[in-house]
Every structure is written in structure tokens, then in C-alpha cells.
Image 1 (spheres, rainbow, N blue to C red):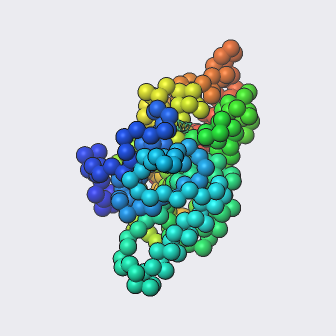
Image 2 (cartoon, helix red, strand yellow; image 1 turned 60 degrees about the vertical axis):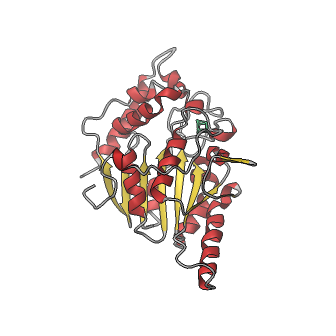
Image 3 (tube, rainbow, N blue to C red; image 1 turned 30 degrees about the horizontal axis):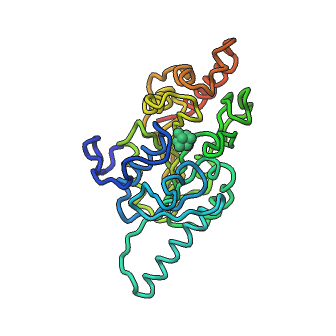
Length: 303
Ligand code: SF4
């Protein structure tokens, strides 16, 4: 990005922490890194809304890992709960009870809520221009309930309900959201923290829905080594499987283009959910399909 930003290098990362050390999330959970960074960019006046999903574990009454308030809502009701908070703050301002609150409302969801159960409510919230931030931590399955297939599960990935590998491709949530023409949509990755911070900073210029899809490396569900979370995240970006991009009022720009993409195999072979592609018999047909999908995507990127 050549735009003005407070985040030029990793050294510019704010030192303030809004997550306490330790949490009930699994060791090596990529989602924790994402939320940690997002809160650093958004600052202390952030109110979280959470729906069922792994990140709801940040608050397990009477314990909390958060230094910010969080409201827990039913699965499809996250956007409605965010609307209630936004409206409540506006009511307080209009009555003169508070002035210039500068509060940001951040809805945290997993892919189960974002791609499936809460999609209708999200669509309605974008449509009515709700002024909120929406962060989908996408671990490509229902991670909190036993790693069942979701609308985000990628082709050939094994889940508890697709043990032989999914036969479907994941939905393109970025494009679904972009079709609503919100002010800002972006993808973010834990291995690219400066890109993430810049995007959350940039989003603050806009009033209305600001939506983020974060790759959610999930050692427990993916069967990956918790120590390799950031490396795996980086491989997703470098193989081109997870494109880093943003769309401002629908106009897409890739914020990182991997010039010499690594083969997708380098990403797949570190995960037990894709183990059946390599043994007992190597499934070149499926590996090729996944590679071709990625190649086709990048052939259409003109920047
Ligand atoms: S199941 Fe996966 S996404 Fe959920 S807390 Fe554990 S590592 Fe994170």
C-alpha cells in the first residue's frame, strides 16, 4: 500500500494489549493472533459481539481473556446484537448522556456463522449500512463442536462429517459480501501483521459495514503442528490459496501478489485433514484440481 498509514513496519505495532496472557483457546490457535492484532488496531474503545464459535471462549463466565466488553449473542443474531449496541450508543448521544463516544463495535464470528447460519442476518446488516466491524475467523469448519463441514470447507478437506474429504468447493464469502457494495471488505492473515494492521486502520475511515475474513489456522481441526501455525498461514499466502486483498466500495485491490507461487502441495501436506491426498495412495487428481483452482484465480488477477 502506498497510502498514508501509521503501520510501516512490525515495529509500529501498538504495544497495548487487549487480550490477557493465556486463554481457553487451543495452543497455536491462529484466531487468537488475529484478534490480538485487530484489537491493537481498533483500540480500547471497542465493544465485541460474539456468537457461538471458538472465539466465544474468550469469555467463559466468570472468567475472561478480554480487556474489552463482550456481548454474547445466538448464532444467527450477531449482526442484530451489533445493531442494538450501535443504536444504544446513538440514543445516548442524542440524549446528551455521552458525547463523542468513539466506540467501535466488532462482531467476531467463525465461518459457521459467517458462511452459513448467520449469512442472512449479515446480508441484511450490510444492506442497511450498519456501522460496524465484522471479523470472520475462518477455520473452514465448525471447530467448536467437533470440526464438522461448513460452507467454507475447501475441496478434499476431511472433516468429521466428510471423513473421506469434501466434494464441494468453499463459498466465496469475499465476493458475496462485495456484491452488497459495502465500504470496505478485506482478507487478512496472521503471517502478515502489518498488512492486517493497515487494513483495520484504513477501515476506520469509512462509516458502514467493514468486513474482514481472516484465515484461521486451526491445529486441532486441521491436524497441524501448533508450532507451525504462522508458517502454515504464510504457506497459504505464498501458494496463493489465500489471497490478500481489499475492496473499497467494490473495487478490488490485491495487497500482496505472490510472484512465484509455491505449489499448493507444500501447504496441504502439513495438515492431517489432507493426509488422504498423499497416502496410502497419492491422489494426484485432487491435488491437481486444487492447484488448477488456484492458478485459475491468479490468471484473472490483473495488477
Ligand atoms: S478448535 Fe481450532 S479454531 Fe478453535 S480454538 Fe482450537 S485451534 Fe482455535
